[in-house]
Image (cartoon, rainbow, N blue to C red; front, side):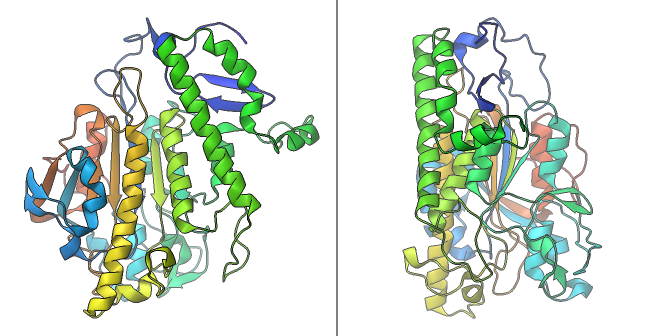
Length: 452
């Protein structure tokens, strides 16, 4: 292994595999300030990360919305799992997606909820191939940050990919199962298999290296990290004591995640109603969610990408939650007709999803930058849904949380309750501008949201 200086996107490589590394103080000494201040960077030169996490089927808003406004607020029942992050997040109330409402298009609110959430554009009502929406906020950022990381963006889901067919009242499945849109007519298909995400981030497959592919395929049965340990030991000699500990913790964390993926594969895959589920997907939904959050966190930590989306479940999902005592389908329950029993079960589901967000924030907060700040400090994590009251298919006062400090440009620790409704895209526009990106409009935005 060469002892030449390492860049921020250093890699260990051996036997055709790549392993992205976190930034190390020892390898960055003398380079601070070498890179000109640019877009997507904090004031100290650290990379800024942007993530969008989607929660399906609205929320029981009177149990979601915090009590009080500004900095004097109390987290409500659904957000209690986020209590330890109160100073790291802000809840925004009063955002709307006008293109989500029915209008002349009639039914299809779940398809419109997912299709509009990041685009702010009205999807064309069609079940054919002539789909049309708008460029999503994440892809606007990814395009402007292209070339700064190995991957311009990372798209994740816990649902199988569906790009065709009719899913909701005459709307193509492409609307309901995709958050990211590269162009008005091209959604970006997310990956739902954590094994595939892991190998995309940390391994080169035989298809990319056909020579000797057979031997490398056999080697895949062993830990991917076995291929890089020799290079890791060589790198360790160049690191200070703190960075040696960071490298050890990082490699241990990656190995633990890989073991969990292998266990999920070994114990089999549950039978899916629509057919065989992709290999590598855990039987337990919570485990699946957390593995995907782990993948996104590692992608941010290693600076493999700075933009990510995670569709935890598509809007209209009818998944049940036996682990928390909810055996009825989520979509079925969302049309609760004020039934208190159904509302109680929906509240459990809402809280379940905020627990998963808390898990992700914990992962980011535990990852340290070279200057001692956490990855969460340098992140903007938007947790949102395209419906508020799903019983009425309401697209106003949408659930929205912004977590992280954005490298110091955000004002967490508040409940920002807007006096007048504003497009959800105003929030995105404000975030992208705070990242230093030259963006003047996203979808139906009318101006950057202030006060965030």
